[in-house]
Image (cartoon, rainbow, N blue to C red):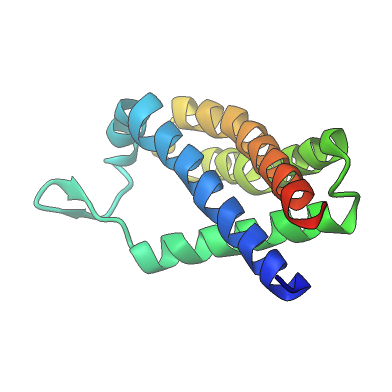
Length: 140
């Protein structure tokens, strides 16, 4: 397999595993908290939260692309550094999102802010781990 295909596969594997972890957090682990607190903010249809899939997917594409590129720009074979870079990406993307929303939005709850502050670095670290391990597997 050529290098370009390996990089595409690395990106796809990261997208899938990152998104699965994100979905588990938001729908299973803390699904009730998100649903209750988002309802006052969300676009609703028949009392159900409407998820704009295209924009949600675009957000994941941007986040995954930045995560993969930043880990690759450092030392993707260095597991500790990859996890640290990933945690920083999560801190910048998700934690800042939660803090900014709490600062600006009247109905953004403290609970949502705390969940996003905690989740950002954890999810990012997971993503950095996935990139590093997948890189080692593909490029050994």
